[in-house]
Image 1 (cartoon, rainbow, N blue to C red):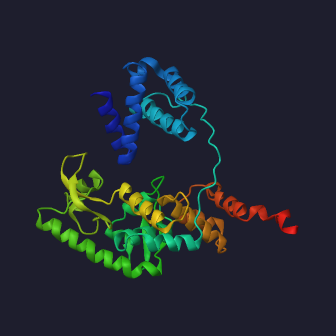
Image 2: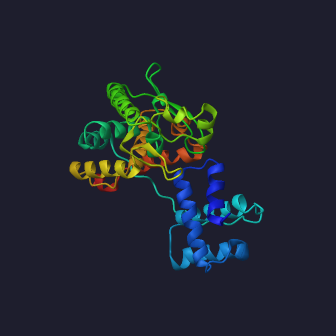
Image 3: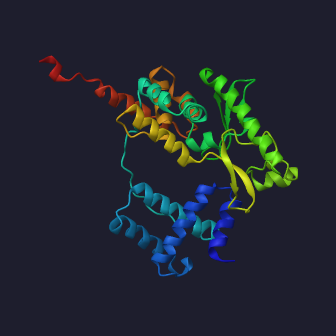
Length: 319
């Protein structure tokens, strides 16, 4: 088996995402080209150190990019090639501490009012209303939106963890309309010879290919058209793409003239900050965001402190 095929097979066996597969394979190719097509086993740990030094000193890439490259190469050597985990321990580049961009409640309202009405506005409202990562929102299935209990289930979030979030009351009617729209997509796919969506292969094996064609596993935010699945070459209905969401938000920010650099993740940051401002405790926010450590969530206390100017009144106001 070629090394690239081995790497892909290992990634899929470990259940990593399609985006992770794409990223890791890209770094593997770049690494091999850097070493003039030598096999990774020939260059070993020294080769990794040389490549990371090249990224830092010659390419001057950010610490986060260096860390991503290191993750990919450690996975290659340890998981795909069976190397010793202890041997491939490296000192990571220190990331600069940056406070996230946060919108005020007025700015969130302005943004959502300028997002295209219908599915785009509903999806962006859900990102803010539940504090979802964009990928978590896009991967929602019909079964994950529980109208009886008025909750939204995030399945297999970051760290492969599940969590449950209260459904925003203001989105209830919109979510029901979206469900009706999704039903039409599902029925249309059935008429065209199949309603298949992507599910874990093990799930389809367990239920005899019924899961990928079932209503409950259908995407809650399906794409407009079916497309070929690059993993098995079959025609399937995918969910809306992240690039599409980025375009929705970019257009809304321009129209609303917010004057800030806003991404889908900014809505998640704003959700957490506004909860903290309203008196919700840090532990509850940590669980809602799906953070493994409360240390990660504490960034929002620094955001609020910075927004208050460190709570110190400017001496200019005393003049």
